[in-house]
Image 1: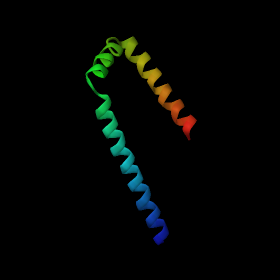
Image 2: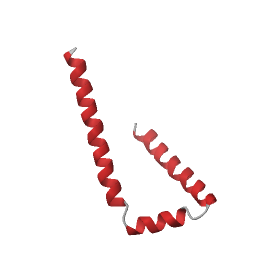
Image 3: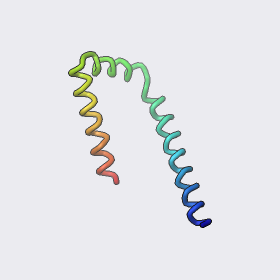
Length: 67
């Protein structure tokens, strides 16, 4: 029982560490140039759909390749 509890606590800690790291990196990335590019990528419905599809495919394939 103690082993299960320790694994659960360690897993939760690693998850929270990952969320905090992601939060820090997103804040760094969201500078002025990123906002300008984001406005260009989403200026119309077609561009928004295409950008969402491409970025989603890239993040999905990156996750598949690494894990």
